[in-house]
Image 1 (spheres, rainbow, N blue to C red):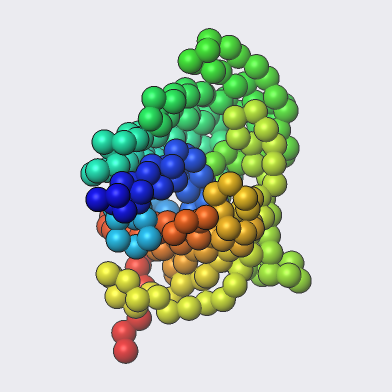
Image 2: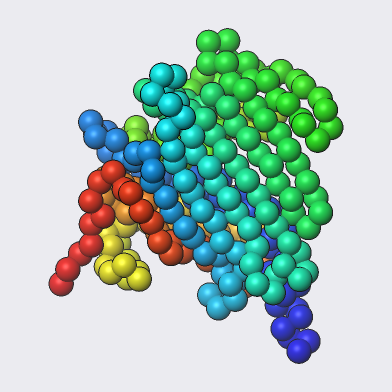
Length: 273
């Protein structure tokens, strides 16, 4: 019983470091070859499960893409992350992230972050002016509004998922097999870096899938064992779907696995023996 309580405590501590960390990491780490056909379309939907040390289900996340309307040429992406099962007894989490971005260049127009993590809440909306490169950050919880400058072609933590799927190529990696992208989150500009490791055949519930194995650089210390603690596998087909994510933390590990999907824009490629 004591061991179970310890495991639950560790799990809730992990969730406390925010679902948005995991959402961000699997949103931004998609490689795609330059292609005329888009990697996604309106109606695309994914569902993921989050587990602790491969056995304790701790949460789930959904990713949904829809078209705002045919006139303003905006797409609307919505991500929901929440705790499940016994974790809710100790630390209930419900996070919502949304992005409105332009179809043509996949640059953000509006970003929403509305989270409730064990009673800690945050409700922020960001309006991006791509002409002036000014982001208006509205803190709805504290009723404040501030303007910040952002770098050209910066992404929010949701739009980057689609931007990288569609426009970036493995050929653009540097001599260290790395790439980086400018991001704007809450009120800060920063550069995120990821590294391509290899191409592997991954056994999944859907069958054998050819995947790119990649690794983002994370900050070691309080949560992660080292800077290279996070590893991801994304499909090597034209969809560039994140299939699996594994994070080695101070105690144990976290896994995120794709459970189901629908309405892909390209064939989902399964390798047959």
